Length: 210
Image 1 (cartoon, rainbow, N blue to C red):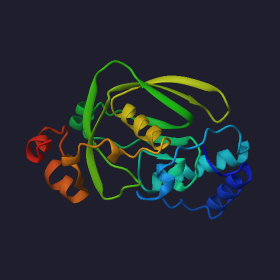
Image 2 (image 1 turned 90 degrees about the horizontal axis):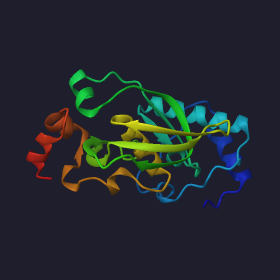
Image 3 (image 1 turned 180 degrees about the horizontal axis):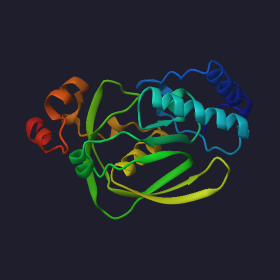
Image 4 (image 1 turned 30 degrees about the vertical axis):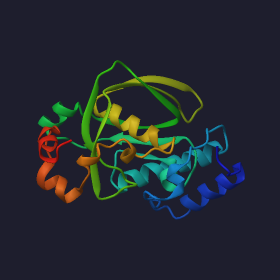
């Protein structure tokens, strides 16, 4: 639950969108990132919701990233945007099951595992810049979510898209990937690129002993 009234949420969105610039992204340690986001139930009208989603997409792309949750820009609502249009190296794409994820927004999402298979890969976060760590996640998930028009959708995601879905939905529960990271795998971006930027994490497992 959020302590923000609908009027305060509208004022917040108006303030964030007024400049037309990407929003500042909160960093780990900000209490907003550790709170349960509130269910979206019409606190914003259609125009304000559209403006918020456009701001989130612009902020995500400018960062750049493949997903962004509303709490990451200080809006405590269960809303996120996702998009992965980066061209991955074919070997990386095959190992990680990384396929293009066209832009879409998710409102009030929840996911559940499909099957028992998991996958462990490095990932990072726009709210913990400069670091990456290995997280073991469900390889496939079923996502229930609402669309901006109020309709409901259920969809299954596999591979890298499933990882993005889980990462962003976790944000809405106050969970950051470092809560699930294999601690010995955590490394700075420069060290990751120097030592462990491989299609899989097997070299890192051996070198960092996790």
